[in-house]
Amino acid sequence: MVDPAIVGGTVLLCALIIDRIAGDPDSPYHPVALLGRVIAWWGRPERWSPRLQRPVGVLLTVATAGLFSGPFILCTRLGPLVLLLAGPLLLKVCFAWRALEEHAAMVETALTVDLEDARRMAGRLVSRDTAPLTAEQVRSAAYESVAENLVDSITAPLLYYSVLGLGGAAVYRAVNTMDAMLGYRDERIRLGWAAARLDDLLGFIPARITGLILLAWFWAIGRGPQAWRTLRADRRKRPGFNGGIPMALIAGGVGVAFEKPGVYRIGEPEITLAEGGPGIVRAVRAASAGTVVLCLITLFLCAVLANRIQL
Image 1: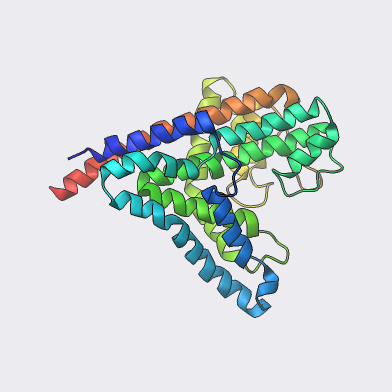
Image 2 (image 1 turned 45 degrees about the vertical axis):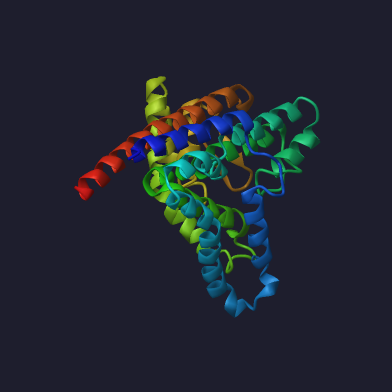
């Protein structure tokens, strides 16, 4: 019998290698792109009367998560060989480490050439109006996206994989994608209510685990007190109760400020974001690597526990 911890760990490490080599292809047939088209079809408020929007949103949030996660769950039932072959590709669908870094790098490169182009590029990462932003505010939008999505796009799906397998990672990715598309306080508020609440719930523990790993990293490099102070002072400035944790820790630990004009300012700027950008990327890499180690330990412990239950 193949050791499930070895299978699970191999799938995880191979998925990480695929991510670092290939990133995320820009294809309309990427599974998350297909998921987005499904969400876009039912996530238009004009399709439903206001009275039906919330119950329809609840029902279709659950149905969409189930539909998306189905192939992932099936893969785990087809035996270790199929899991070893298909699992890395399926798990890679659920997280985006390299792409997160690439998006920030593209904004930085654009800023050296044309501010307007950089504004447009930043507008693909955040929901705010980027047209009036200064160069530093454009950098803030890009690096805020990196800091916040450390949990959404890397650590949370990996943590769910380590505990619940491919199906857990897929459900998280589906819910997070629905929240990203529908979780706004505008005409989508009723349809997106279930996805937004479920995303908050699913992200609660991963955000805090990621926060502990970030805090350990900043203590290791001598910036722990600054990261801790900013966490305590600023984590609630950003709407929601998860995204502010990595943003505040990274802002304080690196010594930069994240600013959404008229909404919040997180951290005190000891250095500019142009200077602090490499430190932000290093912190994201450290937190991601720490999460991978934690996931491997969790996979081993889960396998040991499963063996003891069988005995």
